[in-house]
Image (cartoon, rainbow, N blue to C red):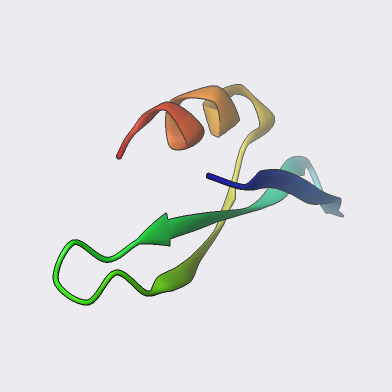
Length: 50
């Protein structure tokens, strides 16, 4: 499974990170990309979830 933190975004007072991971569909076997913008502290949790 591919995973990558793409960018660190800054807005006014919050620091945010955009994370993208590749997830395999159990039904078709095709891979899709899941993107999310979150605080840097939550990145590890995002990648550890299936």
